[in-house]
Amino acid sequence: MPVYSLEIIVVLLGIAMLMLDAFAKLDDKCSIAWLGILGLIIVFGLLFKVQWPSQEAARGAFWHFYSYGDSMALYYKGMAVLTTLIVLIMAADFGPVVVEQTARSEQGAHSQAGLGEFFALPMFACAGLMWMASANNLVSIFVSLETVTITFYILVAYLRRNVGSLEAGVKYLILGALSTGFLVYGFAWLFGITGSMELPEIKQVLSEGTIHPATALFAFALILVGLAFKVGGAPFHTWIPDVYQGAPTPITAFLSVGSKAAGFIVFLRISSLFLASHVLVGQVSIILTVIAILTLIMGNAGALPQTNFKRLMGYSSVAHAGFLLMALACSPRISQAAESLTPAAVIAFYLGAYLLMTLLAFLVMTNVRVKGGGEDLDSYRGLFRRSPFSAVAMLVSMSSLAGVPLTAGFFGKFFVFSLAVQQGRWILLIVASICASLGFYYYLKIAASMFMSASDGKGPERVPSGISVSLPTRIAIVFLMVGTVLAGFDPNLIFGLFQ
Image 1 (cartoon, one colour):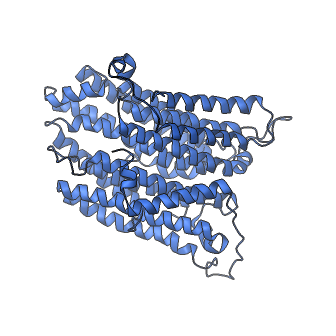
Image 2: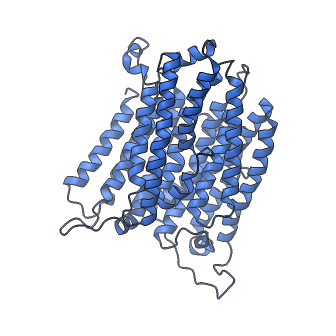
Image 3: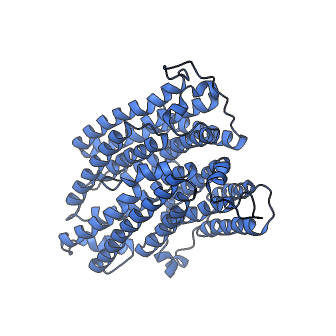
């Protein structure tokens, strides 16, 4: 099966879900979500069976927009599919909240009107994320990026009877459109100075050093604004806490993991064009270092006073973007040994670990939210008595996000720090070490509260009500927990997927 057929299958699957919603008489529209889940399981299996065309066939115009023979692209496609699959499981659990907080149905309409689109739209975002993973042309990067972004504009504001969701949607739309303007202008400037939109040709022109450094750095600055917004880099991160809090919980998870992973593969490819130039590498490294330091400080400091779980996870997302930008800033200025760590490999591993531990947290969060627990941190006090399974899952997630040894998150930070030591970036290393220690406080205080009394100490202890976990959610939680722990024992479980 040709590699590009994966995106086609995902798009057709999304269309089929919309058609099923429009024309089939369904008592429970959650069956649409299960269709998508089944389809994505099949697509994930096909990732290991795809074939690349021959060298002769790969000379066609299509391959000027779609990278050829790229194992890293397949890895990121797998991340997009797996993230969307887990998000659909969350969305199925979240269905009652969507029905409650969307517009009231007209007379004679289905009682779950609007729920089918909520399940189908992530499929189109998934296709855009997969295209983004293989984009090697400025045009294909922009088209795939906007395919994802426009879908998120709709999904963030989907709860039309929820003021927070509408506010988040407006903020995301306005700031997203502004960042897109910077990105397009940067692409246009880059095309103007290099005469090409294909990344390999742009890289060759920049590496020759014939272009005036100021013009190239101006193009990089414009592109940096757009991409830093997408991945949550400071000072362009201010939209994240509000949007994460207002968006439906499954969509917050999708933004946190899927959008960040696709954004970073584009960030990595674009920045590598400028880092390949011996004239520009010094200035670009300094810019990335400053952005990484700001992001680390703003993300971790902002998370400390939060009382809302989704806002805390928003600042957590910014903090982890700081560690990823730190890896990018540690790109070598000279050719490095083949056996040494590379920023691309470290970022890929970190994002794989981030997927496991973050989706695990959001699965538990969604279940607690739907069962009436709310989104405040106090809702998790005494969780172990209400649902021991959920509490243990959240403990594994928070431990990994903090970087506790024998979890995937520990090795993610360890490899970033190793890369900084390898390149002698001591200022980055000191700042990151301090910020990582802050993470232990705000992550593990949640973990500790789950095993404490449900009382706040100001009155009698509340009698906790149990929280049930559906079978699909339980399976997904077990899968993510096992992956988080096993990758903490053997990081090659993730490295082997793209090397």
